[in-house]
Every structure is written in C-alpha cells, then in structure tokens.
Amino acid sequence: MTDISAAAGDGAGQAPWWRSAVFYQVYPRSFADSDGDGVGDLGGLREKLGYLELLGVDALWICPVMRSPMADGGYDVSDPRDIDPLFGGMAAMDAIIAEAHDRDMRVTMDLVPNHTSDRHPWFRAALAAGPASPERARYWFRDGRGPDGAEPPNNWPSIFGGPAWTRVIEPDGRPGQWYLHVFAAEQPDLNWENPEVAADFEQTMRFWLDRGVDGFRLDVAHGMAKPDGLPDMAHIPTHMLHLDDDDPRFNNPGVHDLHRGIRKIINEYPHAVSIGEVWVHDNTRFGEYVRPDELHLAFNFRLAQTAFEPERIREAVDNSLRAVSQVAASPTWTLSNHDIEREVTRYGGGAVGQARARAMILLEMALPGAVFVYNGAELGLPNVDDLPEAALRDPTWERSGHTERGRDGCRVPLPWEGDRPPFGFTTGTPWLPMPPQWAGLTVEAQLERLDSMLSLYRMAIELRAVRPEFAGPGLEWYGSPPGCLAFRRDGGLLCVLNATDAPILLPAGDVLLTSAPLSGRKLPANSTAWLI
Ligand code: GLC
Image (cartoon, rainbow, N blue to C red; front, side, top):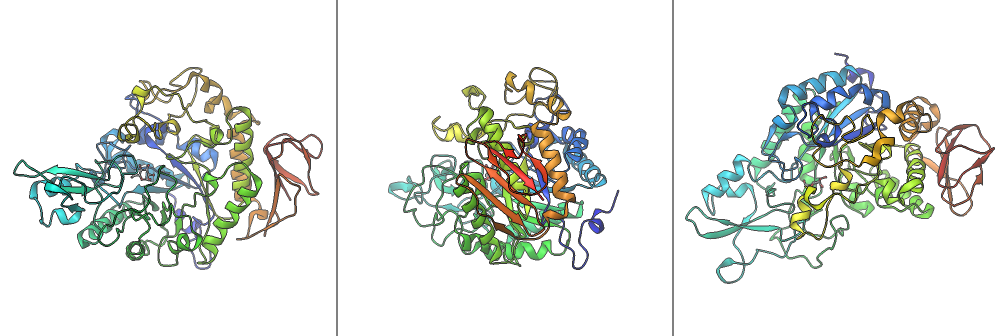
C-alpha cells in the first residue's frame, strides 16, 4: 500500500491534502451493484475504483454504509462500528480503503452523530427501561402536553413531514412518553448533553480512523445541540431546504463545544479531515463552524441553491468566500448531492440544462477550495421526476402524506454500459427504475467522446490539479458585459461565464478549456471558458 499521507501534503508548511481536493460523493445504493440484489454495494464500488481514478478525483465521500435497517437510505444507523451486510460487510470496506489508497485516493466516510436508528441497542433499551431511566437520558424523551399527555411536547415538525415526536407504549402497555426525531420516527435524536453520547462517538471515530479512513462527513453537523427547554417554533417552515437560521431545531450555540470535542480527537490523526453538513445561511454563523478548533470544512450550499443568473452566482461565490475568510478557513463548493435536485434539471433540463451544468462545473472547478462532485453529475444525469409512486423510497413520501415525493429522483442508479436498463448497474432489478432514455448517458457511451460531460469533467479535474494558474486562495472579479461573469485567480487563471443567450467575444488570453466549442473567439450562450 502506498503511503499517501507523506505525498499529499501533511508535512510542515504544506497545505493539507483536502484544502483544494476534488471529492467524489458515492451514494452506495446507487453507484454499482456487485451481487445482483439491485442495490449498489462496496463490491460494486471496488470494481469501479479504476473509473474514479481515471476521472481524477482525489478523495471519496461514501454515504453511510454502517449497519442500518435502511429507513432513510442508511442514515438510520443501528451499529456505527460495523458495515451492513447489504453493502458487503467489514471485509468489503477494508478492501476499499486499501485499494483506494493504492490508487492515491483518500477515503472519507459519512457519520451520523445527530441520531441513531430506532433499532440501535440503546434505543431498544430506552424503550424497555421506561421513564426517568438512564437509558432514556441518551435520547430526548419527554412527557406530552394536554390531557393525559396526548399532545406532543412541542410543535416541532419533522424535516420529512408530520410531527418531530412519536409517542411510545410504555413497558406497562399504556401510551406514555414521547421521543424527539427531527427526521423520521426511525431516527431518534441523541442527547449530546449526555457524556455517554460523546464518548460513544469518539469510539466510532477512532474505530474507523484506526482502520485507515481519512476523515468524515458529519451528517447534520449543525443540529446536534438542542435549545434549553425545547421551546416551540415561532414559524413552521414549508420546505426542508428552506430553513431559517433561527429554527430552534438547528444551529444552537451549544453545538460549537461539541465540535471542539470532536476536533480534539481528529487532531490525533493529523491527515484526517472533518467536513460538516451545515445548512446555515448567515456568513458569520456559518463561519463559526470552521473556526480553527472546530470542523476543517463545512458544506456551503449557496451555489447549489442559486439559479443560473450571473448576479446571483457572483453573490453566492462572494458570500461563500467571505463566510470562511473571516475565520481563515477554506471554502467548499457543491452543485448537488443526494438531497438536492440534480443540476441539469435545476438549470432547465434538456440541452439547455446540460449546457448550463457544463458551464457551472467549469466555474466551480475554477474556484479556490474543495469541490464535491455527486455521483452521476459527471455523466450529466438529470433528475428522474416521473418515478412511479410505488417505487418511491424516501421517507418524505410517506411522512408528508404523499404530498412531497422526496429525494429519490436524484438517487436513481448510475448507467454504466449497454443500451437498456439496468445499464450494467446490476444483474438484477435496480432498487429504483432507470429511464431507458439514459442509453446515451452511460459511462461507456461517454468515455471516448471528447465532447461528453464525462470528458469535460476529466479534463477540468486534470487541469485544475496540474496547472499553476489555479494556485492561490483568492480571486478578483473583472468587469464584464451584462449577463456575463469573469474572475481571475491569484495564479492567473481567467474564468469567463456567458449566461446570456448569444455568443460573446472572449478577452485576450490563451484558451485552456471551454464548456462548449468556440466559433473563432466567440464563447457561445450558456457556457464557460478558462483562459491563461
Ligand atoms: C442529512 C442527509 C440526509 C438525511 C438526513 C438525516 O441531511 O444528507 O440524506 O436524510 O441528514 O440523517
């Protein structure tokens, strides 16, 4: 096994490997299936490591593969220190770590500190032990309000719809206390005020770091602390991604001590990175999560929430940079993930959506900081919005009383080869149906074509890694015509985006890469150019 810790910048004075890394997010259920059960697994991922090496990514972020009853695609963990047999068990994870390292790729795992599965032994014990027990004190059990305690303890809704509380049947057979679950009822929230919770999480982190993992994505990193007294919410939000920063379910000041505790442990593994899922809009409050003694990185979702409009894009970039620069942290960029509609669809779908997604990936890869690519984005996959209702698996569908379809549309398995579903993803029946129209989007169909989305990603990732023009932490905006954007990196790269519907003349400079073919010096509508 190669020692990549020395090669990738852990020495004194060198930037850490993750600062400008390209991370590839694997949603394991949907990536590649090795055993024909229709659900992707780590064996499938292992078979495709060569593909990811060819793509050129520096690191993997693997969504949860720990033991889970899969009520929320694995984000309901019943044993955080074992790999679910559905994904291939512990041996499969060890093989991924070893082989990814052999190929000079880092491996980061998704950990879920905010909640467990309702099948976790702690929660089973809490149900059995009854009110006021130490077992219940690891979670948020409360008596209900109203006559007989028949009303939930407060008015919080679950992110997936319905109330954030479920009433339990006590050991004596009568309805009794309620427990808090900000997500599905199968995901009871842990009480981080209980020192046993932090101690157990420490054990989990060490378990994986000692096995060779290079860091973690921390799920709901802004939600682990709850406010004193669990007060009612003043406004009930209408959509899971449009939360305001004062939502009492998230972003409570006590969360920062928890991150300081986590960071102390991670510091014992100097190569390792912690990346928080932080849905916080305000720049100052966002920056607090990446102070020098908290998380290394936090996902900034502004770009993923921004329409294809130059002014908005510029604001998103400026805000993301400002949020981290005030605490001297590194920015992160992401256009999509397993919770968000895919960018091709967000930008209008069809040929226009494809063109804009191509333009935006070049814009994103031109920025300083770490980039996160969601599996399938490199193939230009659109969302699948017409999945049959019977196929939907996201708990949102049931919990919203069939009013919100949820996130399955961005989780449809990847098409690898051939001309009809399941496109080499599995030898069985894929867990979500795959559209026959994806025949032109398979890896096989794109690999040799220079004009494909996949080739654009490969070229962009490579140039970003090797060219000196991408150096430096900063950028400067250039004057540009209406509907366009231009910035220059410290190292000299000039990035020009044309978001108008007509071609524009490029400024002086040698063209390094464009998201669409030029005609002469003219950059077509909905495209981006890199110049030096
Ligand atoms: C995060 C994950 C999401 C999951 C939720 C609950 O937001 O990204 O997929 O459903 O946490 O764990």
